Image (cartoon, rainbow, N blue to C red; front, side, top):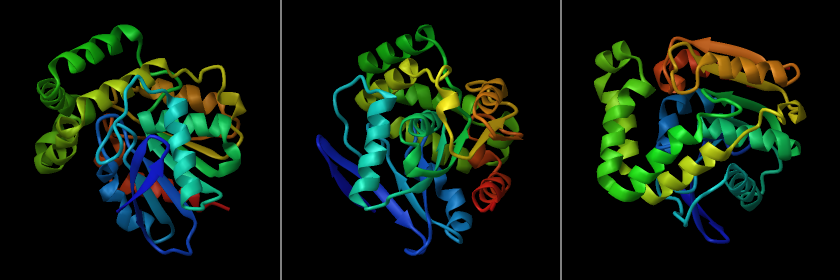
Length: 263
């Protein structure tokens, strides 16, 4: 664990794996923290130095006044890389992390080796979905976060997975209840306002798109759209809801490694 000093606060990060290996950055989803990737670390650190961080407004990272933007969150990633003197890295982001990955691919492709975007879309949802959630969280605070946690199990995992792995599902969904309400609402605004549908063709780095067959938040159609608009992009789909890295586990890790290690 460590902290990088940004202009307006500290960004929490964790480095695992061999220091001389290529760097793989992992970016969390809305309402989780860097530990959402715990299940991947053993596999990924065999080949990479893995850099995880808590996105602004999450975990132990800074919480500043919102709304945030994906450009701002992407800038935080570049500041983290600069502070750690990492010139280029692989990047894997899920959901909101996938939006950050798209922004980096469009605006800072020279800093990326390969890009993996998971359970995401070029545009996620509409203001009609996001604005009531933002208003509820800012009004009700911690109570709203608990209510969102209880509703998230059905969105993040299929019913059979949640029933078979209740402890694993609880570990992840408890991250949502622990998220700072102000930070969560500010990040909701960033997701609400992001729209890369007209910019995807600007992504020139090798890209893998991953989707979950049962993902109601970002359905496979959104993943197919990204694949079709990023030249040469690969596509993979797993039986999973929104958090495919957790539900698909080893199969997810293996597919990401196959892509990142390809010559």
